[in-house]
Length: 538
Image (cartoon, rainbow, N blue to C red; front, side, top):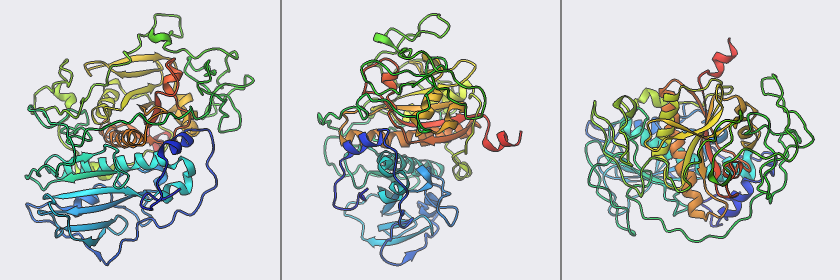
């Protein structure tokens, strides 16, 4: 696995196809240094003036390690390997002299790399790239999606830290057009809106009616991730065959059957070689908690799906659940448009002009520093289905920040297992498929059995098999960004939460009866009402 900074381009299309395949990773390899070896002596981060941007606090709330190993940080990372490297382009109004710096998150120090580029605006621009070796040391060929997701999480951590410090609106670029840096976050000093960056192509014009996106993160709003960025040009791209070519997928535990979407009875292989796992020989699957086993269905039975867009058969033989319009968009920002931030006591208008969201759901302020420092990935298990209002808030936070190439839904557990999504006006949850999906997700998510008993699993879906490299980068960066904001939202609602980034053959669209290779799980967030420590002591 090459480092992105080396002059050896990565075939991202082929890398993603292989990461999605059932091929297991090889043995662990050395991860190398936990921090990039920046040249020059380290410099402390001085405290800012009352009117300046405190870079020390900004980084402490977002990227800095809280322990000597570097694993414990305010930002999520697959395997706590933290591959993201940060360069800071510092302009006027900051606690460091203008210039370019490399950041050391273990020692919370910076290394001056040179002068700032001409035309650098006030504030700081964080340029995010990755050292792929850290992640590939454990995940092998599955590393590339995780590297991109981790970068999106880091961008969101910087964004939330800026909001906690009361800066003007940060500008986040997640357009996927460049390999280095993969993403940038510009943060102006408090009370000073930065000028537009130099024009490098056609840009999405902001609307006249505001600058913020309503987001149920109990915060003051989340911007569209690439607002103000270049309009993306999609090439036709090379079509990539479905990773498994329709072959059967062995269970990670050695050929054990896979529970599935038909009321907990198992997912048979779909017709047409779509790559949905097939159960072999009627093998039963033990529950992760050692409880009852899930029986295998008759061989060759079909997964209940949205056949022809007509709906999902209910397990009890009742009415079908209408399939959502294939062309519909998850409520959120279209084309980089932003929505004004609601005033206190006001009702936040929906982007699609539907029913406004009550102010009690639209957020009461930005996150506090204490909340950001307390953010952690909950260790499993995390049972307990979240309340509908809390789940709707988490879905809205994700959909508001991760629009465009992604759609969002959640698999929920008892008493009514189903896949749910936001209603068209964003004020309620609607069911898009009936039946138990979590055990199948557990197998798709690198065989993490505990996921079968999570209270709910938020899912970002999209990124088809024929996506080109910019599309792949953009979808994964946005998914990481959105899941990080959703994670903080879940924390504010008292939920246990843990991001899930590694997915193999997770063709959710095909499992629901749509065309294969078009609608893969890109990222997930497991949710529950009971934390592991509570579960283990009761």
